[in-house]
Image (cartoon, rainbow, N blue to C red):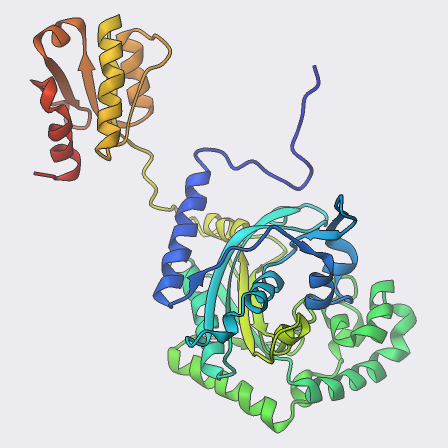
Length: 427
């Protein structure tokens, strides 16, 4: 008999671990609603051209990492490698830009897919949580998105955090910087990796993001985008920093921070973990402004900014800082029964309790009473309800509080109301 395993770069999130995911996803959702961001859900695959145009042909994602296939209608489709392009496509397709409530503030969560070498915290299928704010070029919305990202980590208890900022400027600033980068790197071209040699012609700024050549001497002397910002771009960046200062959010400036996607301009940022033992790749999340992306996918001129974080890396950071999430692995009730009639009645009682909103379970393996009590212990049951043939004949049921050891016998007909009072405080 053959034995199947999950595809390389994927994982099963099992009971005992999945509760952590549920907790952080719920916390992130609550935070977004506090900031007045609404959830959006988009398809897990899109037309390939969306990512080619939206993410950028010169990016590693498009060139090397996308899961692309041809469907039966001979259409090229791609499993989404990131969330922003899909959200922007939906924003345009559904004419959300026509809503009187602007800017449009959205958040999303779901699986993304990238073909890269699997390693700790970096899978081929991973879960990304992100926010997008479309329709405002106010520096205050940049600061709001950054503040939301920082709060996402701090409210879960993380403290070893570093926020890094940069400005990529507007088109004019980037054009001047692009020329300076080409002139700077051209003498070293043959010493750089094949990817950087190609990027030098297509998108020179991406050379600064190369992981292979990061220690090359030319990287340390490359011209900074900050020296090529025009007055408008510089003023915008100063305004973003000023608002962050007023918020009391600390940050560092890194002129080599360019992000991995072609659609960014103006504000770019990353949040990193300084926790010991977190790993060589310290980035937790990143984002920035992407004025021009909406037009690229066929919509009206609309500014936008957003960020995305990896749930896997968030959980890794919590573990690195020794943070235990307040997750209770308890069962409210467990029904122990003995005898055929009692077992059938127990099934009805379990159903009635569940209908009343009470978490409850029972034995389905024909175990003896002692083994059923052991099962209740393993499940950390708060109360055990015991029903035998004698109790059934007398119309009664025994209720034991497993924390205090107290027991009482009550009328079977009142068990639902009794447990609602005990567990929910209902009168």
